[in-house]
Structure formats: C-alpha cells, structure tokens
Length: 272
Image: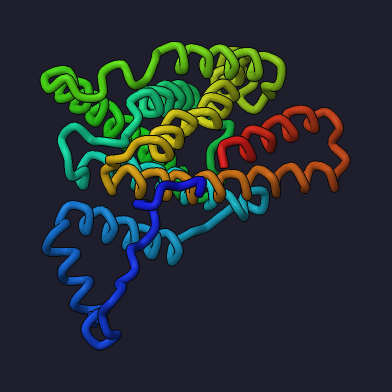
C-alpha cells in the first residue's frame, strides 16, 4: 500500500496464458521501439557496469567503494529517465520539490568532491573522475527537468499550489542543523565537511514529497514510479556501503568516528 497501484506490474486477467504470453525477445524489441531513449540509457548503464567490472582496481582501503559509484550511476539513471521517458510534458506525479531537494543536495556535494579527496571512491575510476562525472550528469538532468516542468506547468496551469516551498525550507533547515552537529573531517576543511554532510541529510529527506504525490495523486506518470524505484535501489546500495563502513569502524574501535558513522547510518536508513 505504500506505493501506488500503478507502481506494480499489471496482471492479465480473463485471458488464457497462451494469449497473454509474449516472448521475452518480442517484449524487448517492443520496448526498444516504443522507448528508444530510455533503452539507450539502460544499454549505456549495463555496458558501463560491465566495463567497470572488468577493469576495476581498488586500493586495500577501498574494496567496496564501487558501491558508491554504482549508487551514483543508478541515481543518475533515475534522473535521466525523467528527462527522456516522461510520457506527459506536465509530468503528473513528479514532485518538483523533491527534484529541487535533489538538485540542491547534489550541487552542494559536487562543490566538495570536485576538488577534495574525501568521500570519493578509492579505486581506478577516480583517475577519470567517474563518480563526480556521474553526479554532474545527474545535476544537469535534474536542472533540465525542473526547467521543463516549471515552464509547462506554469503555461498550462497544471499542478500549481499542490506543493509548498515551506516543505523544502523545512528539509533544508533540518539538514543544516543535523549536519552542523554530525559532520566529520573527511575533507579536513570545515565548510567542505559541513557541506557534504548537509547534502547527505537533505538527500535523505528529498523523496518525502515524491512519495506523498505517488500515494495520493490519482493520475501518475509511469516514469515517476520508475524514478522512485531506481532512487530506492540507489539508496539501498548507498546505505549498505555506509552501514558496512560503520561496522568496520566499530570493529576497529575508532571511537572518534562513531558519532559521524551512526549519524550517516541514520541518514541512510531515512533515505531508504
């Protein structure tokens, strides 16, 4: 019941299995023909994953850092689907306020990871700044989708007044207070560490407006549900990485990092 009915696959009722069945290959070609841009995104994602899998070289301290890159790639894929596969220009069921929260969080995080070495994967993908490139692509996708949605909805008077800016301001305020009390020293720079932790907390709250729309709006663009689904998977992987990181520090007995690790783990759980 947490997700709308449109999120789940529709079952064929009242038809015999022979009539309802369709070969997987036919379904694949139908999808490619009807959604060429989305199919290109999926194909690029799968090829990228295969290339990284074959060429990945990680430091001893970064054996699981590929999870950060995978999480960023899935989130960027979710943003890309909003841009290239939304059926309606007005994007029914897509929350502008969630997109604004994601945009602010990603821009804030990029402002630290582009020049600092903290909180980025310690493997050979860092030689080509893959993690940062993925997040930058996500920012571009979100910015474009925000511009398109706000323009179309203003012209056609669709969705006006459904969401309030106060929701975003509350999320920003809560994220800043929490970041101020829980940030670490990964960048060895106070403002950069505060900014990175702020982005994590804000991203933890970002889906709240989106889930509310999916649960309460009668007409929802199918892509909005796919966006929420891929964001959920990206959040699960992000949470798995940092929960493992927390466990490792607990084993090592690093008391100084416990506050940061538990705060980060809490943010990950909220995000999921």
